[in-house]
Length: 82
Image (cartoon, rainbow, N blue to C red; front, side):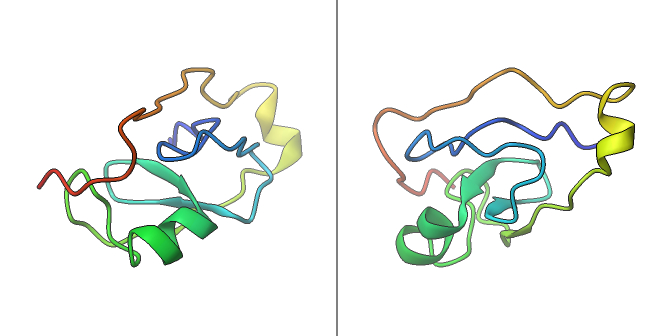
């Protein structure tokens, strides 16, 4: 099950579970659409994988399957580490 991380790793923008602006790689690194497209050119800076829109979990399923509360923020900005 996807973690649905709560924010962008680059700019720390909030990305609630219903956000259509959340982008993830296959390792679930999470970025906002602006950072993914403008800064990262749709590639994860951590693994080099493709960033795609994160699916939205149905609201009725969130109570039993809550999103992650763990924020991951890279204060150094978005730099490719792969």
